[in-house]
Amino acid sequence: MENKFRFYNTLTREVETVIPNEDGKIGMYTCGPTVYHYAHIGNLRSYIMEDILEKSLRYVGYEVKRVMNITDVGHLSSDADTGEDKMLKGAKREHKTVMEIAKFYTDAFFADCAKLNIKTPDVVEPATNCIPEFIHMVEVLLEKGFAYTAGGNVYFDTSKLDDYYVFSSQSEKELLVGVREDVEEDANKRNKNDFVLWFTKSKFEDQALKWESPWGVGYPGWHIECSCISMKHLGEYMDIHCGGVDNIFPHHTNEIAQSESYLGHKWCNYWFHVNHLNDKSGKMSKSKGDFLTVSLLEEKGYDPIVYRMFCLQSHYRKPLEFSYEVLDNVSAAYTKLVKRIAELKKSADAAGEVQKERFDAYRERFADALSGDLNTSMAVTILYDILKDDLNAATKLALFADFDRVLSLNLLTAGETAADDGVDAELEQFILAKIEERKAAKKEKDFARADAIRDELLAKGIALKDTREGVVWSLV
Ligand code: AMP
Ligand code: ZN
Image 1 (cartoon, rainbow, N blue to C red):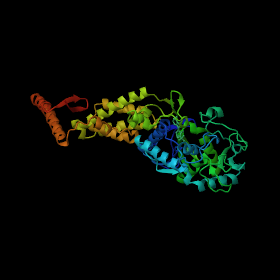
Image 2 (cartoon, rainbow, N blue to C red; image 1 turned 90 degrees about the horizontal axis):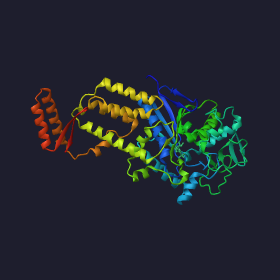
Image 3 (tube, helix red, strand yellow; image 1 turned 180 degrees about the horizontal axis):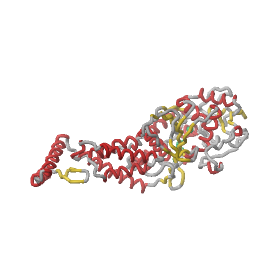
Image 4 (tube, rainbow, N blue to C red; image 1 turned 45 degrees about the vertical axis):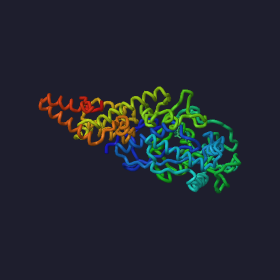
């Protein structure tokens, strides 16, 4: 297999060709949701683009094993280990237990993903499943001298690393993509960026989830969960790690610090980060309370897949501003697109032979667009090029079916409702047979016969139209 799949690696700051550790197999890890509230459509932009990445890799021939955690403990309201546990905040808000909250919002997350055609990763692991693994990693980090205990908590000592800011030559200030919410000084930390591996001295007396550990009863820090869960399922060498840009610092920076200190070697080669979806007032945030969800879009009458198409039309590395005006435009374009595809299905040569060479040429163009740093808007443009082309309907339909393995826009089914005409299969067969008969008459230059067939159908309320894609029929 020729390997030319490229995307922007945040670690090297370059668009690079993906070379997996194991030939043909890619280990991919995604930071999962913090399940204390519904996912907002910004979170889901990240998951849509990560889904496209996974499906594109499969499309060009890689085998992918994708792992995702569910953050159900340890993520505090500030990414810098201060503030309240987000899960506890959710439980208090809804007068439920933390585990009830986790279950409810995990289910809600996957329901949203299903509506957006986001594939569930091969492995999904809640953090609370892996406490022994976290404790083991913290023990090793202490043994190796990369961690210390202070005030009852265990901290990672960032001063032990030559290069803590692996992602950037930029200043720390530039790395903070608006992640710190309630910054408080933690007097136990030896260095400003040291982070908690294990909390025992909880500031929160009412911390719901606690476990025995060598350092006392407590709970894990947020960063440790992604290091452990990825290693548990993908081993010591990982190919691609994904997340939103806000995860670059401190979360992914800390993951690398602790993972590579624990392993003693390089851990993950490629880092894929999706830029934020913003609303007019700025970054979307669950803690703001009032935020955009998939359900809200549905209540307003949008098909969730329209939001997926909205995301695909811009590049994942650019910030994207949400607006209903643009969503309306995308919705209109989507309806038109799937209707045209539904019409193609009714054209006489829909069941004909696929034009193999031309099919392959389009397939290559599509793979090139995806392999060129995931150029999804180009991939969508190719759909329109296919519609305009003089390919037969069978080839067009085969291409849409093939591309939809990645785009997942329901290209072949969504138009059916729009074009549903209540015509039964028998009548449809009759119409198609008549169309074929008319085609044959035309070929023999028997135009009187061709016109008579058209009139015969018109008398039954069926109109024929000669289009670039062949003859299309509709009810009058
Ligand atoms: P969380 O549930 O807060 O842990 O976030 C889940 C995922 O959404 C992470 O990969 C975040 O980096 C990502 N994310 C958070 N906010 C946004 C946003 N406004 N746009 C895109 N992705 C986001
Ligand atoms: Zn993570």
